Length: 209
Ligand SMILES: [Zn+2]
Ligand SMILES: [Zn+2]
Image (cartoon, rainbow, N blue to C red; front, side, top):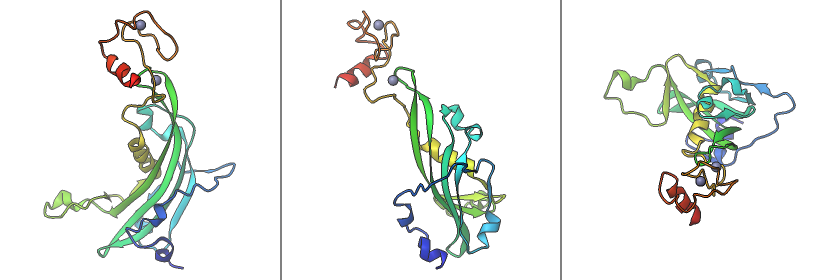
């Protein structure tokens, strides 16, 4: 069975229908330092696959937003494809993990499970659009001048996109009192009657509807 038979032609989305998580086992492979060498992949007809974890310590971009709570699980495949006669590498898969974020309303830290799909198309070499403006810019195609792709960078990019703009601990979070700063999820305070203005008044309105 050829690679095309198993995974369909470029653009066929069937393989993305449902993430297949599989089992990682007791001591999963650590993919934290794994780099895909696209130059090696592009000349082959075989599929490269891996399942494993990324350790929180290497997720530097996510650490700017919150705390990565435990390892990130990754299932990934890379296969050479042809697009208009040019060699590309398509990388697909899925990843999941848990982030600890600060609620924008009450500032309490809470765990948020995250899942993201990976589907990216790569070309080897420098981006021709940088040299020649007549080249049409190909959407969803990334150029790798050195042909190297760190799995952790790709996964981190996808998880960052999966993060909510304004994380809230629960959808009905009452937030902090604009008057005294008390956490209204846990306590009542004496200034509720006068808290109809101020930055948190809008949240109160949202909460009561
Ligand atoms: Zn909250
Ligand atoms: Zn108050």
